[in-house]
Image 1 (cartoon, one colour):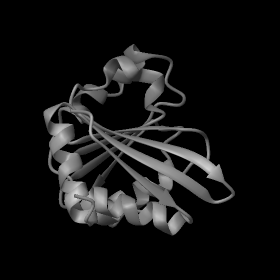
Image 2 (image 1 turned 90 degrees about the vertical axis):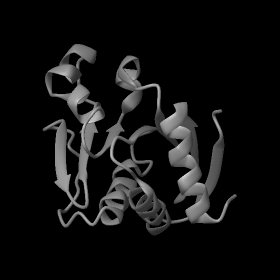
Image 3 (image 1 turned 120 degrees about the vertical axis):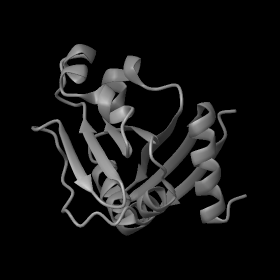
Image 4 (image 1 turned 45 degrees about the horizontal axis):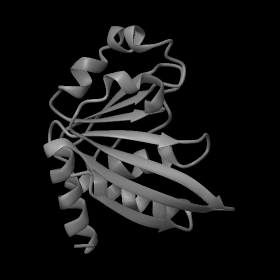
Length: 159
């Protein structure tokens, strides 16, 4: 189906608020892949996702440890593929278990391991359009990704 939702964000709090909606509407097994440049707001959005999942931990980018797990109403597997040296290393840190796990999996710098993206996923593209301005595009892929996007669209009133 590859349905899309476009959202303009004028401040980090807007990006985090959208992330909170992603967390509130997530179901076990959902996967989010971020496609965005450095400083676009991936971690800010993930902080919102964690709030939406009622995860009490402080969320920071797992750039050097590669994957963090935050406990909320379901686990949040937060993976940063920026420093991964390929798909084999990603599998070595347990990415396949996170993707097929009992929670929500978020992949930052997902384009570095695109061969491991599941068929069903929510793709979040963040493009900086000006100082502090972002254009965020949510795209559902596969049955579960399309369903996730429908839940988000309903929650945002963008039906």
